[in-house]
Each structure stands twice: as C-alpha cells, then as structure tokens.
Length: 437
Image (cartoon, rainbow, N blue to C red; front, side, top):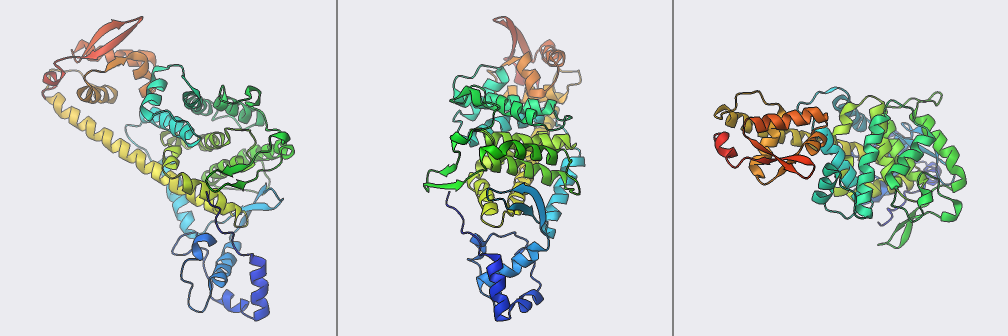
C-alpha cells in the first residue's frame, strides 16, 4: 500500500503565519475540525478546493488548530517516543452515541443462531485477512462438523473460532499479559514456523517490519522488542480502567485496544487476529452483548486497503488515532446493518414457513430453529442433518438439538437413520406435500 502524503509540519506553518501576520486572521475564521462532517487527512484535503483567500496548507493549519483544541492525549507512545492522541468532533460523537445505543441496549429478535453465524464469519474472514485461502463453504462445513483442519489455512480458521469461544468465556475477567499470551497461543497454534513463539513476545533478532510487497517499502516499524513487556502491561491497565485521571468511552477504548496491539506488533505473527479478538473481548467485558452477533472482519475483508490506510493516516499525522476510530465506527455500523439484513431474511423465511404450516398436517408448535431447518430442507432436500451440527448452529444444548430433530421426525418431516455411530436425519421425500406446498 502506498504511503499517504505526510501532513505539513504544523509548528512550521504556525511560525510562518505569525511572521506574516496572518495567524490571527486564520484564528478569526474559526474553522472546524472536519470538512462537511468528514475527518479528512492531508492526503485527501490537498486535492480539495480551499476556502477563498487560503491555500491548501493554510486551510490545513486552520483545521489542525480546531483539532488541537479537541485532542485528548493517550498514554501510548510511538516508535520515537511521541504520544498518540484522538479528537471527538461532533460528527464522530453523533455516530459514537448512535452505535452505543444500538450495541448496549437495543433488543433484536431471532438472535439465537445468529451468534454462531457471526462467530463463524469472524473466524473465517479474520483469517482470510491474514492470508488464509480456504473457501468460505469448506471452512464453515469444517467448523460445524468439527472436522480436523487439513492445512495451515484451515488451522488458522479453526484457531480463530476457538479464540472467539475463549474470549466469550473470559469476558468477566480483567485483561492480563498472561491472557493475551494465551489468546495468541490459541490463534497461532500449529501455524508458526517456530512453534515456540506461540504466546511469546517477538525477539529483538526478529527485526519485525510491516512491509508492502506491492510498493516495495516499509510502511510501519513497531517498537523495539525490549519495550514490549512494559507496553503490554500499560495496555492491560488501559483495558482495565486502571489509569488515573483518564476516562474513555468503552467503544472507543475497544477500538484503541485494537489499534495499539496492532501498532506494537508484539508477536512474530498473528498480531492482527489478536488485536481484533481483543476488540471483541473489550466490548463483551464492558457489557455490550450484541457485539458477539456481528463480524467486523467480514466488513474489513471487503475493504482491506481502507483498513490499512486508517493505520497509516494516524502515523503520518501526529499520531492522530481519530482516523482509525472513524474507520472502525464505520465498519461497526456496516456490520450492524449486515446483521439487520440477516435477521430480516430470517424473519421473512419464518413467515413463509408459517404460511405453509397453516395448511400442513403438523399440529405441534414449532420453534424458530425447527422452522429455519424446514426452510433449509425445502431448498436443500439432499441434506443430512446431525444433532451435533444442529446444536452448534443454534448454540443450544445437545438435548435441545436432539428434541428439535426428533420432533420433526415424529411428524414425518425428517427421517431418522443410522449413519456410522451417529444418527442422521434426512429430508422426507414428501416434505413439500406435508407442508401444503
């Protein structure tokens, strides 16, 4: 990825304006931190028409003056020892408040099996972002059937799925260095060239750089390995709200955890997957249950260049992490919309099967899992249904899954048969007539 144009030096611009006697005029213009509610980087602003009487650099200086009045310093330093910071202009605050309301309190119907859907999507797409090449269909089938992975790509996806389960189990716990190591170990097990580096800081000899093979250049140099223990301890204190005189919105905190872990690159590999997993842990820990029903990596995979650019914008403009925050808020918003579309589709299917059942021979109340299965069975009549897969798909107990399938078999919609050591349920040949279709 081509590095964005580094922003002009603010201090030099201010000094030049002072010498020319133009600084007071610029201040009087009272520019805001955004342009038409967009938090633009210099790389984009320089191509836009400046307000009358200003050139692009003076316009940029006015915008930076407004941003500097909003900046909040973060406790995290960059490679050169300079602090990171962020701003919360009104347009960003509006989006943040809207997402907080949705993620923290808005109820959604038919969410039960959407949890598994989201966890599988996140496991697959987070791994694909890091190079896993297995197809979506094969990966999903592997996870649902519990099949052992055949190659590194499948192993990455399996590991990512286990990591999502791990952070769900650990959501009540405070973040510790040990927990981050365990998370990294789960994510990278049997995927690294040096197996001993799972759950371990990279070494100074590893000489880690983020390299762009297309542009043939280094786009990021993380802190030295000797600094990593202190940096990760600080990150844990930040995650656990242990920093004095520092308060931050939980959603912004989760996004910054994502950014800071990725920035530090504490591991030889698997940093991106670990960072995204920490984002989920942070919001689950803060009491945002809906976050486990969306996949941010599914959205990121569709725009990997924008994802990478959000990091680079920060590094090329005074460590202003607002660029990354804005990008991630947009990603979360798109992920929520994807969940809404998924649920609308489920509701429509449920309504369709309800109409069919009105004319069928069934006279027992069906739950939404059974209705969803019948919708699937009508479209895929050669499918074999297994209790364990039905359990995983719907995140229910084995007994609940077993009763779902046995009830459908009792009324003739499915046929129970022996397959190896387990029972499978096949679609009845006359399912359509039974459903009155």
